[in-house]
Amino acid sequence: MISIQEKKKWRLFFALWPSETERTALALWQPLLHELCDGRAMRPATLHVTLMFLGEVAENRLEALQLAAREVDFQRFYLELLEAHYWGHNHIVYAAPEVVPSQHTSLVNELQSKLLNHRFQFEQRPYKPHVTLLRNAKWSDAPLPRQSKVCWQVSDFVLVQSLSDEQGACYEVLARFSAKAD
Image (cartoon, rainbow, N blue to C red; front, side, top):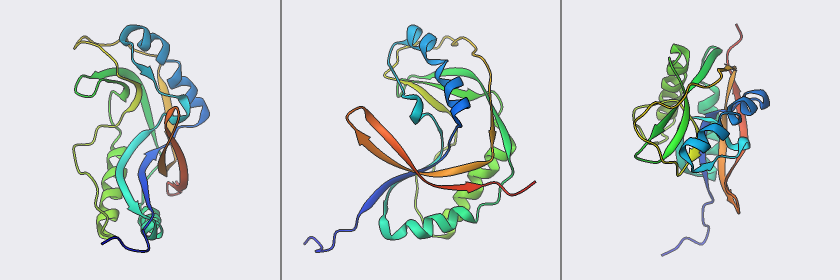
């Protein structure tokens, strides 16, 4: 039996959201990588680093979700992206840091802990920070050329709603959560 009052669900994730400068610098990687790997370049407005994918969240849980995120205590850090890689299992080309800053790892762990404390469920798998640049790409195991370094100062993370339009995925930032003051 279907409930008379359907609960609205939102498709959500937490992410690091680049500034226009960082987004533009990452988009400059795409033409060469597209030439090498083919595929579909992601729209610059959608470039981000996913911290945690939540999937469908009931609308009545949004306030608790934001409360959990506000409890996260993290330090600002720099994320340096200068490598492009290919994942054959899902045919994407992505930007990744050579070294993941410890503050980045701490942020992800703290966010997971706070969400579990608030009884949120999410997919738990090994975390690998990346920015998807191309989808449906074709490449081998050969290394991709090194790119111009993108140095991104991370001072906040965001809660994002995933929507779809005629061009594919589009994202709406719902809330920002800042690092603690230095």
